[in-house]
Structure formats: C-alpha cells, structure tokens
Length: 313
View 1: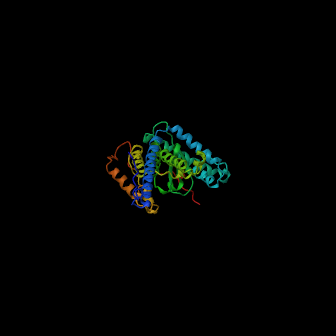
View 2 (view 1 turned 45 degrees about the horizontal axis):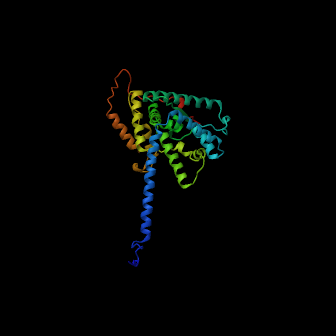
View 3 (view 1 turned 90 degrees about the horizontal axis):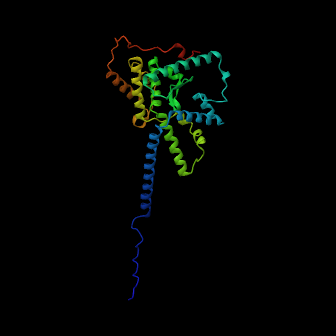
C-alpha cells in the first residue's frame, strides 16, 4: 500500500483578518485582566488594613516619622513643620516665650476637646487621638495614621463657635475610628509596591518608598462614602456631646461664602460638595427630636475661647 502526502492548500495558515486586529484584542484582554486584578487587590488591601492592630498603626506612623527625619530633602524638612513631626533643623528660638505658651494653651484646649468628643463618639480602645495645632492661616484639618489629627489656625478662624470646630474635629476622629487613614495609605502604598514589582520601576526599599510618598500623609484620598460616613458620625457626636446639632454646618457655609469650594462636580470629587453636606446635615437635624427646654442642656452655641483666636498685629 502506498501513501502520499496531499498537497497543502494555499493560505491555510494565513488569517483573513488584519494582524493588528488580533493584537488589539490581545492587548485589550491583557489590560482588562490587569485592571481586574488591581481592583481586587485594591479592595482586598483595604479590607485587610482595617484589621491591622492600632498599636501597629502607631508604630508605622513613628517609622514614617523616622524615615522623614533621616532625609536631607529640603521639601520634606518643610513638611516637618507643617505636620509637627520631629525635625532636627527646626529652630525653636524663632518664637518668644509668650508665643510658645499660647501655642501650648491652644494645643491643650484642642486635645481636651478631642478627648471629650472621642468619649461622646464611643471611640473604642485602644484607639487614641493625638491633636497637633498648626499656626497657619489655612482652612484645613486632616487625620492620618496612628490617630494623629491636625488642626490649622485658619480653620479655627473660619468657624463662629466651638460647635463648628467640634463638628470638624469629630469628623476627623470618625475617620480614625473607622480606620479610613490606614485603609487609604495601605491601598496607595500597596498598589505602588505591586506596580514597582511588576514594572521594575522604583523598586527601592520600603522606607524610601514611604519617604517618596510624603503627600500621602497630608492628602489621604478618602472616598465620598467615607466622607459621608464621617459626617453622619460627627453630627451624632455633637448630639451626644452638646445635646443638639447647632453649628454643624458653620464651616461648610463659610467655604461657600469664601468660594473655597472645589470646582469639580460631586461625581468627580472625593469630598461631597459643601452645599450637599449642608442639606444632608439639615435633613438630619429635622429628623432629630430635640427638647430645648430640657434641664440637661439648652440649644445655644458654645463660644470659642479668646486665646484660640488669631493674634492681631
């Protein structure tokens, strides 16, 4: 019996489709898989970060502080002053004794208020809040890992009462309570390390990575859901501490008046827009039954102490 190989038809291994089309399909497929993997890791890191013991978070904050202190970068040295972190280049002789005493007095006042608000909010053990006062005319406050809350003088000047200040402080305390800072920082650094390993770019040590991302400490990107959660928690804290929610919208109203509102639409803004926050808080106030004739409290605003106001030149 004789076997013969049949003739191979012409063009059997040639596709009728353009080769770039298959390449695009392959590229889109790989890109889609990478995006899905990164999203899964993004949420997985956030979920796991909530279970990091607070004591570990405090040590992490301290290690970041040390890595900053060892850096000779002038930009990072400037950050020490803003954050109240240790800075060997800081010259304490620049301020006189009266100024130092005033800063200490305001810091004690803010810490005492934060401690009381933490109790009213039911902050669980072992989470502790450490307040840092920053004497700069910036309308800002933020919370970062380790329970550190930073309050600027400009923020104090922007509110009309202690209630307005307490709303902001309770909001930042709520971020710490719900572990938002450690979640945000872990996600940012975790994905950064993963991308470094995958791409081979920026594969430095962890301390160098942290030092290279100092902006994460002051600009932790909380989601709109986290911001709303903290607003609600803060308003309920005011109800528990003062017996009413008056003053809760002071800062947001001031931001609108001074045009310090973000120009981004709410869909693209991590912070809910101030007008939306005011409407939400006012709606909460309408649904809260408060008897101002109660003997335990009255519906009045608590004044800010005079020493907390900006020094007049």
